[in-house]
Image (spheres, rainbow, N blue to C red):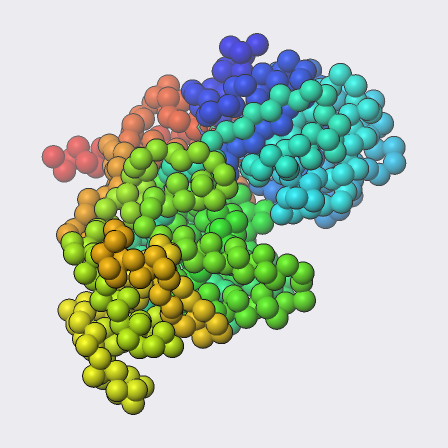
Length: 602
Ligand code: ADP
């Protein structure tokens, strides 16, 4: 059987290797065993049930919570030459009849349905009559109240186990907590399920955190590094989204807004424009993202700090599903903390205190001085990924240790004390850099011995250091105005009894991260751009999103291997028989033309 799976993977998807745990997950399905598969976003969960579907005699039934997710997966399957369909409430009668017809004639390998549809009396019996070989429950954390997207209908899927004896049920999710996993097994009454839990880390995501000084300028610098690539910018409030979209459009960026204050119609237009790559950027609140499977999101920018690391992990996780490097860049400021705190305190919801504690952890992550990957893994109770992830601002050396950190820390702590522990971080930074602003002069703080002691540093650098000292427990922020107070640890540091570590942005120009260099190694950039344009044309002709025609990984491999004949085309990662048949000729002639023109130049 294993060999067959490999052949299926090669012929239909054009992949020659399994991603971690894919083989094991597929073997469960083929071997008739129940399973719970927990893989991170981009871990290749869908293939775990899609590839076996081609080896099993009857239908694979897929339960999925969102129509957009179903559509996306079905588009991809059809593009690979796999017969798949769906039944949902938005379909017309003729469309539905067509699916029923292909069920009757047993042409369909995979059928996607919502839980509501599956629970319609008689529907499951009808499907059983046509033969079911396996069941996949996608986004299975929806079963659990402990998960973040609880869907009551998912609980009723417990009927499946009894109704379909001997048929393997696989539950797939990216939500890793033990509690959710147990809940899934219990609620779905799975029979001694094989539990496969993949590493939670996303090594292809490059995490960076910077203090926000001039948001638009900082964001534009980043966008200019990612010209023509797809990305998401998350903002806290609807007004921030509108403002961001307006400002970026006025500078010529192709951007659409998305938030809950827009009409359903306008939101859909924005989402479609992003998926179909009519715009590069979507500026959005947290309302955007659920059900978006776009694999080639190359960056996720947070224009402000999210309210928890759970949110950050989920939102930033929308980048780089195709496994290629993607940048997750977070801009934060103390103001974000205060905005969220107010929102949480004013919300009617229970648990504002838990929310504020999570907010504090989020802030500490921003001000943190340890590997970002490990900080996130640690937060979710997972083992660190290693010493040096080579994919975050800290491990890449984009920030470096301040040479005389203890002296600098002592200057800051001493100023906090001399100011009577009655002022916040921004004010303290002002005193230390020797600002002439009115409030400092009015308080005669220009007379303090700590005034202008750090005059060679910028205000935002000093603010950063204060944050780092807060994160390290040397100062704390108290009260409504987040006034700084020196802790016991801070007092020991003042006496030189504690070590100090402070970081600042590296002054030297740094090389690109290794993962970025590796994934571009050998790629002919000019050809890549040409093929990208061709991909857009093919996508429009076939009314599917560009990333479904070819993933970015496939496009790079094409521009690396430059195949000129069909056999070589099939050797490109992500090219199976159907893609050869459908696009081979056009792509090959484009590459031939390109190579011919290059040869003429020589
Ligand atoms: P998930 O549902 O876990 O987020 P997907 O199933 O959407 O992940 O897969 C993520 C990406 O990885 C897709 O672009 C898919 O084509 C690709 N992929 C899946 N399996 C493999 C494989 N064995 N080799 C190479 N790429 C793969």
